[in-house]
Length: 251
Image (cartoon, rainbow, N blue to C red; front, side, top):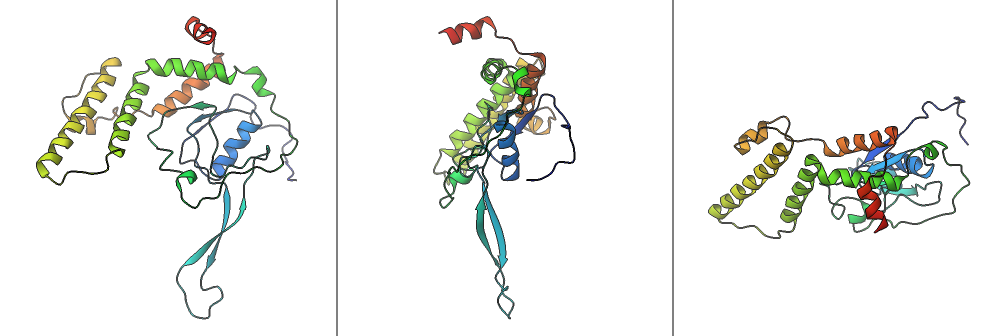
């Protein structure tokens, strides 16, 4: 056991942790602990799934002659208080948010030789009393889903992700310069249309060219951060069920 010199918590208010597919190792341990103890909300995307411990061993350790390189040796795994590993599966968010990162291409589960997820015996622990005073996660998730459907920035992100996914699905490219230029022009036109749809919905002046788009300082909103802030606003103010959400749940 580790002694804590502080007898009281440093902060006992609402808490949220924003993660994405690049959140790995120590950040996953932290996110998992916050989630297991019900101390706060985990928002974003499923994390990387790096739940192992490595030692780096120089190859010249046992050699009298200089040898370049080193071995990376896995010596342990991380486990949550519930006994579940963060390896391979990562930490699942309480409230998912869209991301351009593809979980099929990024993360431990995308690696051929990654160690599998497993579970050991958990340990007794007490959950935080803070969660009892906050809105239920299901209600927060429902409110976020309803908000995201009408948020211009979020719709822009989803459409941008769809365009990226279409490119990922292309397994070949033309070697014809004219065709490639036409494809680039079409992609730029679609990108400009997506941005202008967002701008019109937010009462911003539309852009005329891709060059203007590349220079515009307001053309790359941090949608995940903004949505996470909205979720925390719901937590602090106490989100309420709308008639539409009540009807959807009743159905």
